Amino acid sequence: MALPKARSIEAENPGPVRPAKFAHVVLRTTDLKRARDWYLQFLDGRVGYENEMVCFVTYDDEHHRVGLLALPGLAPPVSGVAGLEHFAFTYASLGALLANYRRLKRAGVMPFWCINHGPTLSLYYRDPDGNKIETQYDVFDTAEAATEFIHRHYGENFMGIIFDPDELAARYEAGEPLGDLVRRPPLPAGKTPWDMHIP
Image (cartoon, rainbow, N blue to C red; front, side, top):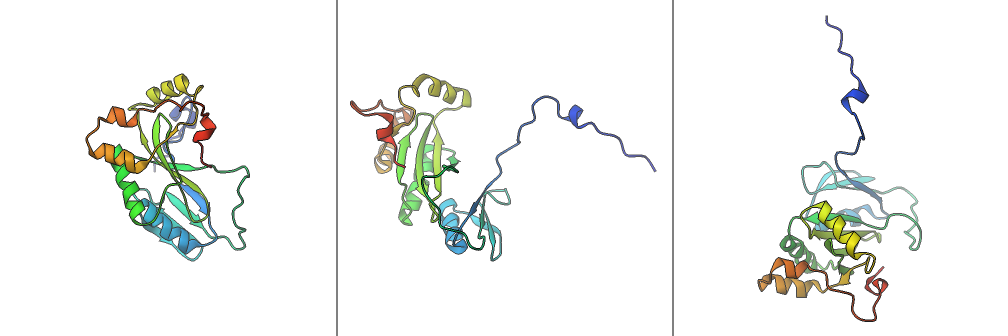
């Protein structure tokens, strides 16, 4: 019987070792069924696994993208404390982002903040436990181009410009060029980046 061949972890993984992907987020919830139903609708997803304490929701080939955990005795969430700000899902096109917005709107799920950050057009939602979720469209084809925009423009406006998603959808369907739709306008006179923020 042949002996197993020795391996070297460092030789197999020279240099920096980085994650292959961001796999999932797990959220604690005070009402598992309510949270499950909300994420199934929000992501147009399916249940990968569930019991009375946990539910895994996915929408693609990953076994779960959002895990929901119902721990006994959880207190309701408290705002104004350090912790998770939000997590985000990227859509492949501006049309897909707007189609998802309309699908959720028909179901009564509305964003509380719609903002053109510059590198992304983003719609922010709150789940039933108050967690913030961003749906976004990447304006630039590469991370380098997005980073360049950030370095060039975020000194003047690090937040973005609020927009109306219904107006943007109408402009999209009217055939307005994509570059015009995604271009971030300047701050209105007398406004600061914080005037564009909705917490």
